[in-house]
Amino acid sequence: MLKYRPFEMHCHTRHSDGTFLVPQLIESVAAYGYAGLALTDHNAVTGLLEVTEELQRKNNCLVLPGIEWTTFYGHLLVIGCDRFVDWRFVTPDTIDEALQEIRAAGGIAGVAHPCEVGSPLMCGCNWEFRVKRWDLMDYVEIWSGPDPHASAKNGLAMPWYDALLNQGYHLAISAGRDWHGPDKPGQIPLLTATYLGIDGDVTIENAKAAIRAGRTYVTTGPTVDVTLKQENRIYSLGQTAHPGPASVSVRIGMEERSSVWAHNEITPQSIRLVHNGKILAEQPYNGKPVDFSVSLVPGWLRVEVYGTALDRPADSIALTSPIYSADLRDE
Image (cartoon, rainbow, N blue to C red):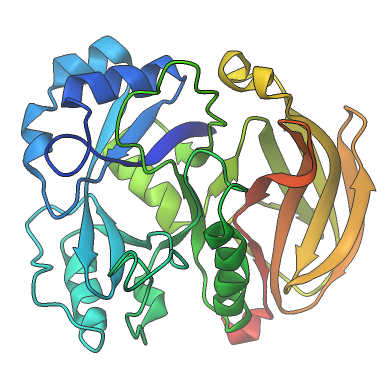
């Protein structure tokens, strides 16, 4: 049965530049209600040696084995490879070959904080790889940090990502706190989560399959359920419908993990459909399911939820990966 589960997709420990001990990170992630995390230390996988079945079972928290390739040309999140894939000699012009190796090793790849400040302030953090085979990339981290609206990099990441969608590429989205250590006393974290649409048990393979299929959404709290109905068939995130008339249903949930985000005064106010980068429709949210009647053209459709957070108006508080539309003759 398909169910969306919350994950923290970007974490560090003392095995790179974090202050978390590995057990401490897992306990912290579990305390915030996540079903799992991606352990993505910089250029290091030694932290995974400390991840045990008992530790995961005790905290009811799955650890996705990962690494953050940290280079002079950008950071790449690599998850779930069954063998070591060498990152040390990758250049802007050989990134496609590296992505092929990751895919061959059973892994998935995602661009980390693509519009982060680069050289000279943060050398290598900005994405400068010249990817030609975007079909080998699985996702883009569009929200980086605990508060998605606290940094300009996230505002820049959205049009950067949309430009790739407009070129016809299918890419899921993720949010990553880029979590390095325990919260400081008095800190009020606006916790983001990446929800993965997992079919079956919460396992590494099923989590990777969810990302590959585009079954993801990001949120600062509320859950989002999206279905598109067309000619008596139901489509969900990551799937491809036809151009033409369709109905879209959006349901917002305010209960899951509410103990860790409700105090941030997150309140949905409107739901927006974005089609090929433009607003297709928008309706106010009054606590009930919202239904849209739309006409699709070839491209992509995303649901965006807007509302207040920390008393700030008109912020996006949840975004989905797209549902696509294409003539079957083009598939």
